[in-house]
Amino acid sequence: MDTQLKRGLLDICVLAAIKDGESYGYKIIKDIKPYISLSESTLYTILKRLELAKMLTVKTAEHDGRLRKYYKITAEGLDRIEEFKEEWMEILSIYRFVTKEGKNDAQG
Image 1 (cartoon, one colour):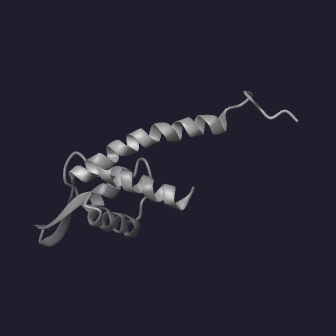
Image 2 (tube, one colour; image 1 turned 60 degrees about the vertical axis):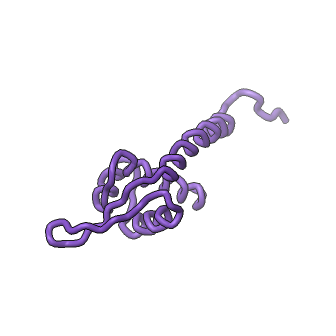
Image 3 (cartoon, one colour; image 1 turned 135 degrees about the vertical axis):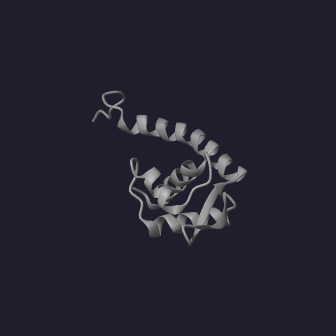
C-alpha cells in the first residue's frame, strides 16, 4: 500500500478511536486492534503528528501512581473525519473502476 495513503488511513483510525471520548495509548491500540495492527511506536508518532496539527489535545494525569497521557479529539479532528468520509466515496468509486470486469475491456 502507498505509504502516504496508509499514513492518512492510520491517522483517521486513531481519530476515530478517540472521537467518542478521551483515551490513552494502550486503550487506543486495543480499540483499533480488531481492524488494523498498530505498534506503540507508530501510534505515538501518529499522536504527536495529530497534536501538532491541532486535531487532538493532550493532558497528563496520574493513574495508579504513574503519569498517563490522555488524548481528546478537537473540532479540527472531527472535521478531518468528516472530510475522510467524503473522500472515501471517491476512493470507492476509483476501486469500482479499477476492479470492474467485463465492461469496456480493451479489445485488441
